[in-house]
Every structure is written in structure tokens, then in C-alpha cells.
Image (tube, rainbow, N blue to C red; front, side, top):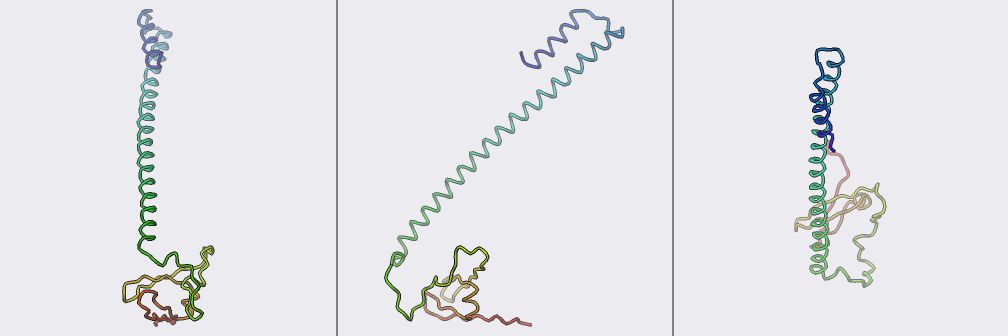
Length: 155
């Protein structure tokens, strides 16, 4: 028996007993049964709201799972495109002695280092660190142009 059914049963019992609601005891029992009816209604509303919220949360979880799957699929597709587009990605040959390694000096494990970004005239985006900034220049790996930096304040 649900709480609503129990409340209705008590109200029916009170009506069936034909209590005198004019007496003190009758007034008290009628007030208690009325209060139980109100509490039952509130509890039922709370249960319905909780069920609706739970259903909404399940839908949100499903949506987030779909987004996560989409993002992971995008990352895999992006990685595959990079491998196809870059022929020299897997070039393990030794660089010439006078040629600088473009990733030399990068400490990817150091989260405190700042990485800067500059766009060359050819459209290539080049990332570099504090050490390269202090050197004052970098060579574009795409077109070979030397990009120069200045640490002086423009006042």
C-alpha cells in the first residue's frame, strides 16, 4: 500500500466511524488526518520531482557520453590525418650538425614553462619557449624565414 492509499484509508476510517468533529477528541483526530493528507501530497510531489530529475540526469549522462565518444573519434581521425599528411613525421635520420632540432630545449614535462606562439608570413604557426624568446629569433620550418623578437618594453 502506498502512502497515498494509507492516507485515504485513514480518512475513510474516520468518516466510517462517524466521529463527532465537534468534540475535542474528534477535532484532534480530524486535524491529524487532514495533516496526514497534506504530508502525503507533499511527499508524492517530492517523489515525482525526484523521478523527473533522475530521468533528466540520465539523459544528460547519455548526451555527455555521446559527446565524449564524438571527441575521442575526432581525435583519432585527426591523428590519422596528421600521419597521412606529414611524410617526415617518422623520419628518424640524424639531423645535420649545423641544423637545429626544432624541439630542442622544449621540456614538455615542465608545466611551469610558458609556450609562445607566432604566425610567420607564410601562415605557419610556430610555438616556442622562453629560451627561444631570449635568443631573439627563430627560423620558420616551413619557408626558412628568420623571425626576430624583442624583449624591450615599448614606452
